[in-house]
Length: 185
Image (cartoon, rainbow, N blue to C red):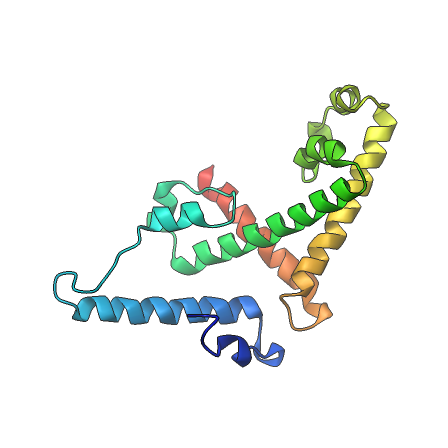
């Protein structure tokens, strides 16, 4: 319905973020469906899709406990899924770039440590896995993080109205992802 309608034609960077347009469209869609469901008699033409089934088909690898679905507002879950999708798309692009350069093994080993604190990383163990020195691991990880930041900024740039909005959007995405950690702890 999104692609058949004119929603994408309504997207105007001057009016706000694309994410907000999508979230509002989904809210309106769900409100319309809810009103339609209330009008139907005992099921009628209504076909229910279980929330858990829909979330399991979503592209994100991020998981939220079932309790989270019950207690979180729809907007918070949408923002979390959006953030996870943007981050995972950036990781996919980074993996593709590493594969193109013949460094997929390096990416596979080091990608788990992109967001880790330096004190949480065993450079020696990584050096043994990669067959390089500790210093080389630090350099590789530094370079991988820089590439990841660039790719993530490019992904976010596609969703905001102006380049000046990129940093705010990245902070918003980080806050959405951090909300999972605060919920689960």
